[in-house]
Image 1 (tube, rainbow, N blue to C red):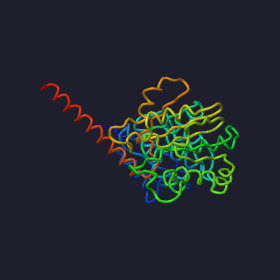
Image 2 (tube, rainbow, N blue to C red):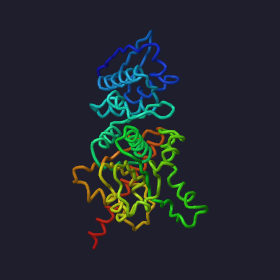
Image 3 (cartoon, rainbow, N blue to C red):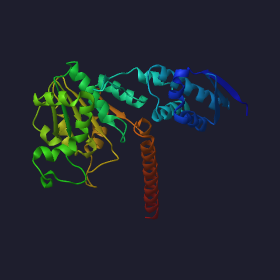
Image 4 (cartoon, one colour):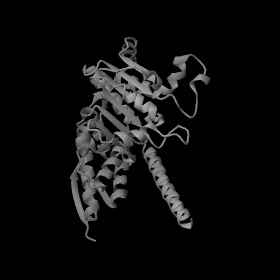
Length: 334
């Protein structure tokens, strides 16, 4: 096998950020592409097989550019750059980095972190109704919330309405202690958390008192027409088909709707059909409705979360194949 060597200039002020603590990022690249990386006097040598060395060099160039744009390079960003290189994707970190949605109250930029997330954000900009479907940690709700707040601040909508079905782990609201607000708050807490982080507690409370931001269980949407609003339905996998139809028919003029859900985490009874699953089958061909499927590649939490999601995906596929095989054998025997 022929050996390829690349030499890359890494500015001294960016070395620690790009290389990682104790050269952790370099070690990841060496393992991923079977190369050796040696740094001397501001130059990084990448030695290995041609394909591996080329990919590792591309990733390092991406990371250096990202660092020079002022980003802190973390493990998730390195993992995703490696994935893009292995798939020979035309997408780059720079392309994703340019898409700034807004800033949090602490001044932290909110932007998509994967190509899947960028497609999701672009769909929200272009379509009236967008379904964001994917596993935990893919940013479905957080990015939708950021887009809602950005639209609200830009006066593109006059209010934000956030809702989710109050059905978790089989609990009934009537059996929970406290008044109505204290009963529904635990189910809506993830929505509050995102609002606090992006908008700030004071701004959120002021707008909520004015009725410009509403957070409510899905059942409260019945009988209403929602005009000029940015509406987010979270945890949509826990809706029934009737609830989903009820929700989607609330939409009025000047409104935008985001529906998020994870089809693998249903809390419905075992024999119940999910409104999210049915919506995919019924609405898939309507032009102004987009379905964005996010995957384990788009998980932006701790890298261990991505491994957990991938492990469950593999297990579920094996289980489905085994079930299908057994069903086929029973049919042949009969």
